[in-house]
Image (tube, rainbow, N blue to C red; front, side, top):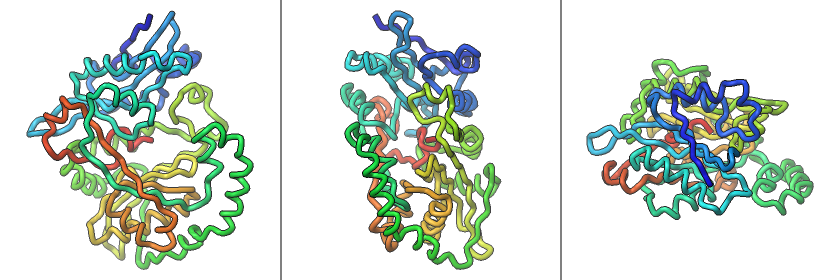
Length: 365
């Protein structure tokens, strides 16, 4: 018999910061992530953000929800992003993930969204026939350094046994790889950078110039929250609580940069780069159309200087610029980020909802 426990924002802090929480066999939400949820400027204390499934007092599954608001047809709608789900392998294919989804659907009045999903989660969502795809961002993933030994063992169990072969292949490719050499020679004449720990007024103004056109319509307050409360923290020797959490929370090395880009004395724009163990993303890039090429070059130079293996962006115009740059166009593959909403929510959003690459939980992971 499955029982479901709901945890609201007002209950979350007491749960995860209690001394006993570290003794749980399975952690349903990291403390970093919980702190971010608690400080989310768009949440209410009564919002249910964590669903725990128990059988015989044993935690066997969980689901997390990230509160948000979204604009549609001249109304502001309270919504929840489906942000993480896990089921104990022994209890899979028993409908537990669907029960958790049903509970969230009812509590959130059918106003749910998701993106940045795994195949397993997508399969659960598809079974319900509740969701419709409403937007797609075209992106690019550029490989700066060989990383087969880091990627392939995670794809399939049989690949894990071949890890020494992937390591040898990476070594050979590293010798032949032209990307780091070319990144050093990318022309960025008269370009300078300024690095910030938190967004200043110029960045907030640029950010809001982008987001006011989006369905999420984030303000500077949300950007400050994102930068102040990351879900990841560097853990060079491992984290005893993070090891019990089945989503990334404790990479060996996590870097988060806010970069203002100047050409001569003119502010071109800004970008945020998150790098998790050398795999980088760009939650937000904001610039004028005429400066897309400059920002693409700045992004690649930083990925190289940070020692990244690859960098992924869903800024469509920047992606197109990268695909025109040699040799990076040969080291780049196209990517898509789809956004899904419940059919109930789709009706309220109207015909053309639009999102940025950092929307949902994508700015954090």
